[in-house]
Image (cartoon, rainbow, N blue to C red; front, side, top):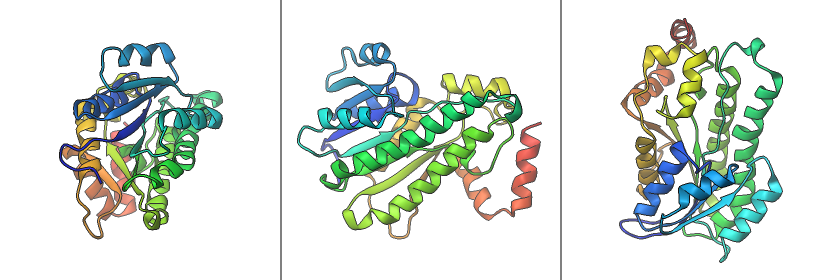
Length: 261
């Protein structure tokens, strides 16, 4: 495990902007070698310009062959310290009014992309010193929310995948964690606000830098026995996460129904 000022290698998907770019910047500031990959090649190349230690590349997370090529190119020594599955998309609004292709795109990027990263990144993480798979989840995974049905479903699946792999990969020395923020001040939050009333009721209280700081802490945290794999980001999210864990299902349903009005 990397601690203190030690450095390593980290591959971040969806790194052209928003949370992915903030995470890349945080690790670059710490002296790490950072693979910044994104489906938008021009944008990620521009984002990496002038950032010492940044290595930009094009990656459509839906494409397993592109994953193989990216990992082979970036992990020249066959090792990877941290893989951040950050790439994601969102469409908000009534489920029945959302085009079926928009539903499929969320599933393909938010879930299949994470599965590809985990499956194909595992051999590289296993060869590292306590390699870490870090999945970007969401508070939308805690309970299904109107106007965010498919998005929340993909994030709930990522949450479940994180829990399963955290147990499966212990024997291989690979850590698996997720970050669970609420609404973050990115372009995606603006999309959510157009179709989901919960944004207006709860507000946007996190910045991409807040999530990046949480990612840095997870990589360097000490092992705590019996601690779960999920890390809530921000005070508001921590309260909601704790409440969801102990509140009866009917009460969670009532709260989510009122937030959606």
